Length: 136
View 1 (cartoon, rainbow, N blue to C red):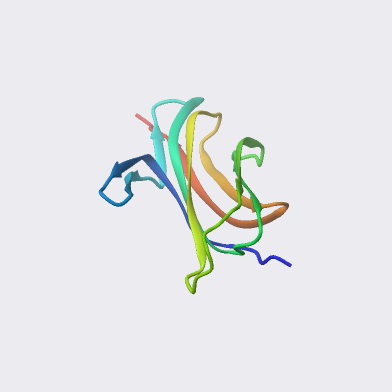
View 2: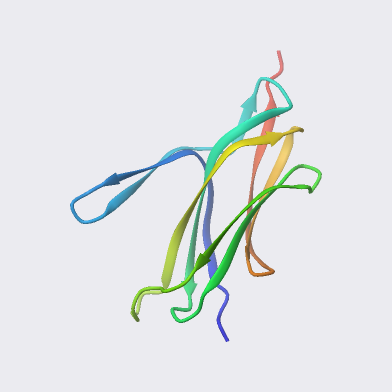
């Protein structure tokens, strides 16, 4: 029976870039974001979500799904990945980082917007960002 991986981080950022080095590439996170301050509602937002997950079973495969919910609990978007064929056995727990680029997400109301992370049907983590309309 495979174990449930552990969510270590869910972070909303303005953008993600990768810079090549001699041995691999390095991830650069641009402007971590808790709130979006917008001039009008409805609007559209573009941003990235960075998720780190650890403790995958090396022999198993996983269906990972990230879902975004609006202030009324209505799902706005979902993205999914299949995780399989992990590295060779080691003392270090197997983990990974998922980057989801969200483009032109429709936002119809101010308030808290939820980020949910699932493995199969099981929710393994959640986060949120907040949208505020700038007044005056």
